Image (cartoon, rainbow, N blue to C red; front, side):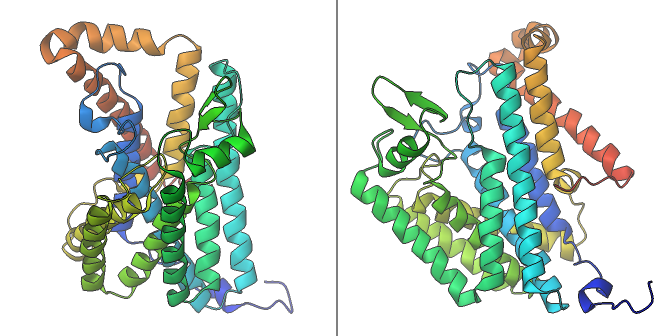
Amino acid sequence: MAPGSVVRPADRAAPPARLASVDALRGLAVAAMLLVNTPGDWDHVYAPLLHAAWHGCTLADLVFPTFLFVVGVSIALSLSPRREAGAGVARLRRSVLLRAARLVLVGLALHLLAWWVLDLANFRPWGLLQRIGVCFALAGLAALSLSPRGQWTLLAGLLVASAVALGLGGTAPGTNLFDRLDTALFAPWLYRYDPVTGLGHDPEGLASTAGALATTLLGVRAGDWLRAGRVRALLALGVAACMLGAAWSLVLPFNKPLWSSSYVLWTGGLAALALVGLHLLIDRRGWPAWGRRFGVNAIAVYAGSSALVLLAIGAGLWAPLYRVLFAAPLAPVLGAQGASLAFALAFVALWWAVAAWMDRRHWYLKV
């Protein structure tokens, strides 16, 4: 230590303790992402592994909100202890914003790769990692700037504002207020855009980020309760959110592309219940933390697997690999859907092996 240097409390404080259950839930969400995103044949996929065409909520539609919920939980488990240890709020805000920027940049890099490899007509700035980065930044700033009551108020305000906007403009694809705003601001750089009709849509666009942020804030509040040992309150939150979401869906349907308020409550409630279950089984009873190895390298696994898929497609290897190694030998036995699922499971297993190898060497790539 240099003479005269000062050790701040935050510098000598130990890093916040990790909960294996949180890493496990994050890892299971990443594994499910890979499973849903990489079937061997998109024309032969079991229905639960397909996203709902518009309204509705399948198993596939639970994956991304669960991940964002865990992002919120991790914010609470990381920022609160550091703040209590004496770290300055300004310093923590810079840390949050820098990490969010890195997430967005990685997402943009993947979309640049897709634009080049797939020879797309337009570059698409919005995407999964970009949404994670934006929600991480805004939820992190809220956790540092607002009291728990203020966070609940912001969450409720986002749900109400989203519901009002969709109530006024309807929920039809392309003509709802969310799609109109995204199209006005970003067309033609959207997931889907028709220059003839002028209608567009992006499932990770700007407007629907309000609902995604509400999911993340729900995770922040759940993380604070988990850290305080308020497991019964967390269980009650999960049950209440599911019940409210199910009831509200009779008026405003579940809708992942628009991230409707009923979808926020339903998926957030299920994520809270999953967290309670894993916490009781793993943290308290010592069960194996299945999924943890994916969870501690979540962004590395997602970004690496996405880049591999794009490069394999660009090299002309993706379809032949499936056809020769899976479709030809397995489809006669398992059927076309079974062969497609076997390919997706093999892809998940490949990246589990990569994650396990990294974990054994204590290599954790933090974005």
